[in-house]
Image (cartoon, rainbow, N blue to C red):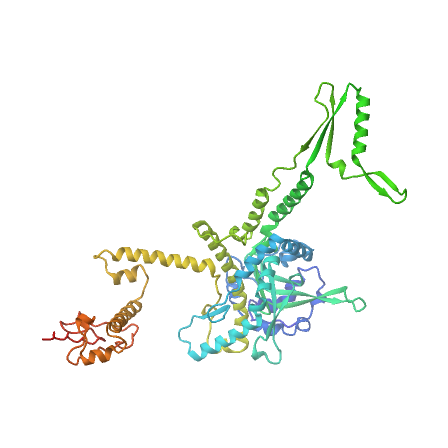
Length: 594
């Protein structure tokens, strides 16, 4: 294997010593993965591309690097424990652990809660976009911005979030990890990434260079090789090293107490799921046992001695337990044992002096319809997954309130946090794509210049924004009722308007006033109000008022010019007899007839 890097031995850590780095810490033979180019011919391409900022920071860190080599001190213990390198193999049966999570996710109440989360994750904006790109570089030309947006749309289309986003987020919630392999053509690297392939999490493990800051240095893909004689049997696994930029990796960010493996968000619901399943079984068993109505027989046995009384009761019980039925073998009606009868009655002997034999019904369970205990655990399950408990009953009418709104806002922030983790993976893949297509260096881009964001959940998130606006408007209206407070100042201070927005609002007020004046003329003089004013036939008694025509006056021009946003208004009030800018002087009222 060719060693890559600079003369100091500190550059290109993962590419320079990947096999040596892993072979000393894995329970696999070195000859299994001795030739990285043979196993992964595209490794070198990805090793030269993608984002390396985290690695550069780690190499110059005092806290996590000792300055002597690529592996910071204190990362691995003296026993070379595999769990310090491959996080998931702390438990040898990773597939079994994932199967356990999938069984929990198939439970009806858990599945409903997961569906609520998945449905809120993917949202389209007015332009039909699910993921949006923000370029934070002011000196970038419009052509370059257009080109970057076109390349970004390619990457988003490769993921196909509109059709597959629901399954991606469900896998993320249940399994805690999502792996995508970036597909390129080694003969046409300048075309960048051509697509993504979803990899099962049980076949891929991240390799950490530093377990303290959980910096992923690469991945090991365990490619299954099936037995040619038995296609369903895996003969062995080929270990294929992959560069960190070759895999788009998204995890939950939740680890166990020793930070040796990733836990899915579903782990929070493990205990409520167990409790809920147990309480449901207990309720079902209780209902089966206590639901039937029983009979109590108090049999008068007089002065019989106890042995004879017991025999007498036994005879009555046998007769009660039997029922008449037709027997084909005997061709006659016979008494046969009825097992159902033995569960329906209790028999007690009564001595002389009692009121005689009585039969009374014993009522069944009185609280079988009360499911408050069950609902407690269902709500606990929903809260463990951050889903509002108000969504439990789909037939329940919507109730707005502070508590419900707060619960929904917490749920919206939870969705946004998950979207941010997906956004980071998409951003890294997009940077790799731009570097392969040479656009990264051509436009002199940096990582902070690019931001990728999903559309936030809409329902209660928008409702909260409307309520915030309502509070601002109420404060504005309250303050502007005081003549000592300027409306313009209140617009800037309490509504948050800029100077440009304030001036634009003034211009629109002028246009609204002009439009109201024109409506008044239409109502007073009809649709031909301009001709009426021109002819001077309207009178104050006819509704023209001070705006009536007279002596061939010219009607005012409607519109007043375009409402130029940011246009400086005229200084000072208009002179007496002079109309404001953009408005014509209304004609004088006609003289009364002689």
